[in-house]
Image (cartoon, rainbow, N blue to C red; front, side, top):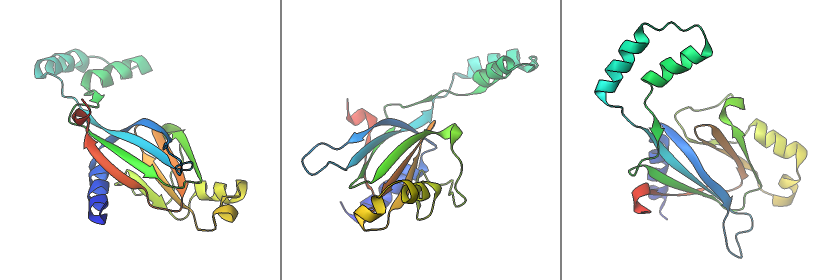
Length: 178
């Protein structure tokens, strides 16, 4: 794959407002023992019908929020559902020769001091995850090259990967699978 293609795919990935972690696991094949594949899908907002929105707005306008259930009803009445639709992009992210990965809840994650919120695929040369790798594993002794920390930011999940190489990205439309 050409570098320009990788840059274009990364720009397209970063342009998504939300991503859904669809699948993860090892790549199959003889030489793929330490290769990790992630599939993430672009999540889009599904617009509601205008008539229903105005009815919901009128019904909720008089509702006071006293409980968390009241707040939930207000949010649900005004929020558009998030879905993976037929035109959503599906991104495959291949990490060749990864040392470790973890999946954690987005809600339970601490921010890194250098987080770039415009990126859905973030790269760190220093991070808490790399500190963890240095203090609790023998990866740096075993691999012999400096590890980089890649984070894939999805709705509800963050996938952290320690790897020496840049991931290989590919993209397709969801409806290409049908």
